[in-house]
Image (cartoon, rainbow, N blue to C red; front, side, top):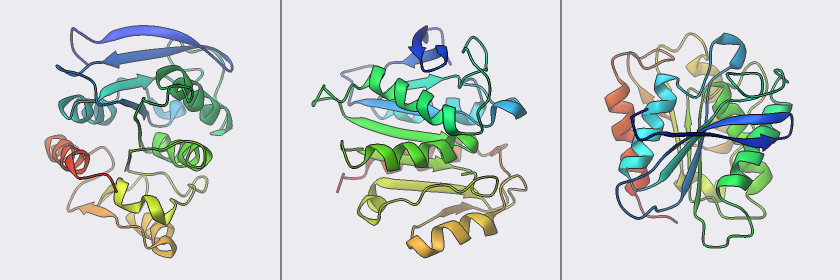
Length: 214
């Protein structure tokens, strides 16, 4: 993302996992773990939407942790249709913000396939530890069902989708969100990758991160 990005790797469930760490200028507010889009369609931790999410978190005082799912870049293993990728994400969370560290604030974010995996990570983690913020962009809901978001977390959750997304149709996202009464922020005239509107996406996320935690 920038010259100060720290690249490293950790031991994941299927072998090494690539990590990229970006630090805020001052004291860190917590750890934000950000998941990338579909590995079989070119998704990596360097995706522009993922980097935009990382910039928004860093600007808001968070440490941003991006990672490559198994089989991407230097990460070991092969694509597992979301099952193994969920375990990858949970391993990164435990490395970056261990559950044993009761002082470590945690946020989760994801784009497209990464948002789909993030919903399941949230569902797995929410009963055992607080998640301060959840950000879902272009959430994949049609290839495999995204997990519902507990109503108690709706005010801590930002769901953003492009009106003209032809990769994940807005109609499908609304069908997922409607039974939950989960608000969705729709950006008019924008496609899946937010071309030309990444600054707007960043501003939406920073505004969400500045809102009080309920």
